[in-house]
Image (cartoon, rainbow, N blue to C red; front, side, top):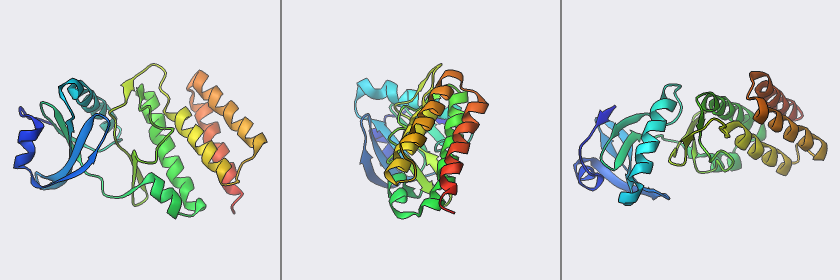
Amino acid sequence: MKEINEKGQDFIKKIEEVKFFKKGWRGIVFTGKFENQKVAIKIAKNENLIKNIKKEAEILKIANRERIGPDLIAVGYDFIITRFIEGEGFGKVLDQKDLSSIKNLFFDILYQARKLDEMKISKNEMHRPYNNIIVSGQKAFLIDFESSQISENPKNITQFFSFVISFLKHKGLIFQKEEKSAISLAQEYKKTYSQKSFEKILNFISDVFAKLN
């Protein structure tokens, strides 16, 4: 990872093919070409938010060890550079794909969420994953770690499983009895963070999707 002693507004003038991409709560994101690859450049909106961008860089360094999140390429005075993930937003994929193919995506995300829990990283946005997960091929990439924090009680599995329960209920795949069972499994995991409780969650989802066969 490189360290760049420049402000983002000056640095992006040197980037090839630079384009505005989106504006978030704490940063403005541009895309461009850096060291022969397409990248995302997130610049803090103002001086008060630089600490949040720096924190995101530190979280990404840790997450990248388990190949989670976009690769962190460089950190500047008030910006970070990551590899740009080409793909579709998770919300769009959920609307387009058939239910049987969504199961593998759910499992991919849950395994990543489990790794984050083990690393004591709480992403804090896993209950609303529509815009902060990109699907590229058959792989899900968690993005936007600016709300993340180190925590002894990370919420990645419980938040995402809550989303899955709501999704499956909306699709008519689970009803009140199954929903109560799922909530109990989430509560068990929250208390123990054990591998056994995690596997119970995976088994619950497998059993629900088995109804489609």
